[in-house]
Length: 130
Image: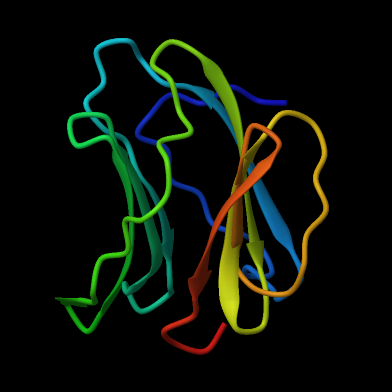
């Protein structure tokens, strides 16, 4: 496990294929108001903008296509705590991202899923081809 300074940007060698999961381990700084994870497409679009905002007690999900932001999604609880480590998993499914914050292991289904500290947090429907 490599520790990287932020901001951090890296490519995914074969691209973020359907049924693959991206794992991110981190700790939110105590002074942070927000942070984000952006899944960028080769053309500069943002397939998934995942943006926990402590100042709003919300986690924003969105996408950017042709320099136009889509409609924000912000329902759900704030699963992150300042100064506390987290495991974030984003699974690319055929029709959406599934996002979870998790501790160690979780089960996934088909789309972008987001897990935070072991619990399924949300999904985010694809707004372009996965």
